[in-house]
Image 1 (cartoon, each protein chain N blue to C red):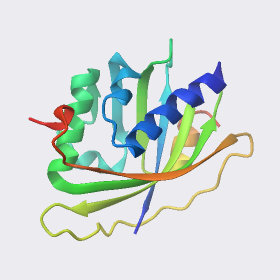
Image 2: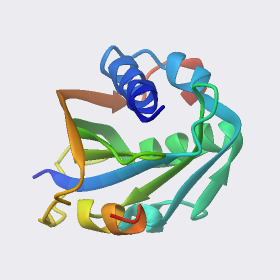
Image 3: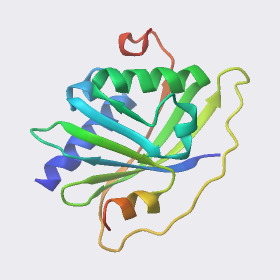
Length: 35
Length: 135
């Protein structure tokens, strides 16, 4: 069984990721990302 | 700029699919914040948020001490402007039993404003002899 997870990458500067946030659902990730 | 951001994230997952554990760390800031406080899997870790590249390595060591393999498939990389959302499907294999975990799958809708980019591949992260995962 595969579990859906969402990962939001933000604060990307000069090609490097500053923040990675993991969520237990895609919708949770989208909501947190403001969409 | 957002398109470049998607490419950065794509490069990370491409590297993972090749079992290249060096490239992702070249694309993480030295002071990266790895926040799992909103993920149910946070209970598996000693802390909800890890700081710095060493923190990310520690988090991976912790999850791989529980699971022999963490197999994930990238569904989409979605351009959200200043942010990139990766939608993934993950399957963990118990380290002791070798049995797949039996967690429920949560279904959700998708934002109509999100722009997706074609991205489907899978990889497995296991506890190998890679230096970044060693003790």
